Amino acid sequence: MNVKINNLNVNYICEGDGENVLLLQGWGTEITLYSAVISEIAKKYRVYAPDFPGFGKSDEPTEPWCVDDYADFVAAFCKEMGITKTILVGHSFGCRVIIKLLSRDDCPIEVEKVILTGAAGIKPVQSETAKKKASAYQRGKKFLSTPIMKKLFPNALEKLRTKHGSADYRAASPMMRQVLVKTVNEDLSHLLPKVKQEVLLIFGRNDDATPITDGQRMEKEMPNAGLAVIENAGHFAFIEQQYLFLRIVDSFLGIE
Image 1 (cartoon, rainbow, N blue to C red):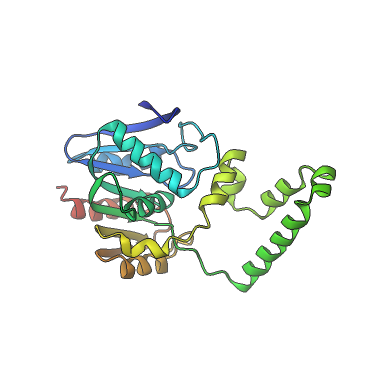
Image 2: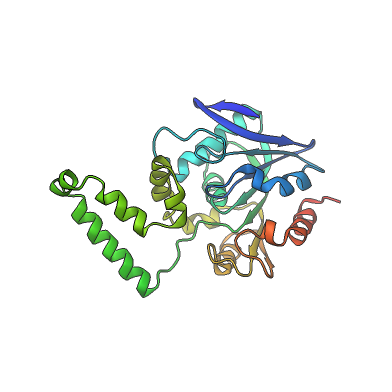
């Protein structure tokens, strides 16, 4: 399905009947990656699952968005769909957006329950090696950003960013690279106590993108959160241990 939100064409899935569930994806994925989760939840609920702008089949934003912009998008999508009350389910980057949205005093939708899996939002502690690499990158960036270097070597700064960037950065379009830079390093840990809804955190034991220590901290700092840890799973626990993941979701949402 397709809908226009703020002049952007947005692809989305709507499946099932019942109370609303809104599923928000991880960085750079297509919403079809979550088909098994959507179909399971749709046994009892009406599930809405949009491709974020810049992801999947949706248009890219026309300027570099930050996490707040994506939270605004979710509010606009809910308004367009007539959603005033919903359960929220997020993976990775989608969890960033959920934390931002729910921490707002003027959150436009009523949310009672939340599922966050592989949740991003806590800035990692850098190792000494990582700090040295980051420092070298910043020095190179400063040097290549001078007017004379931009004129002499117009592509050098982007090459430096590509060399030092993550796999997500290298795979992204020029616009989405700018979005990634604006969103990935924002630390949302100070917002965790503001997420007062009933929250189920699901983390893979072997997740090296959002380590289990992040889940433990979220459980501690969110007032009404519980953590489920899935063994032999990483950042995509809903695929790597699908059966167990879905049984945990079923229990939390009362799906028989």
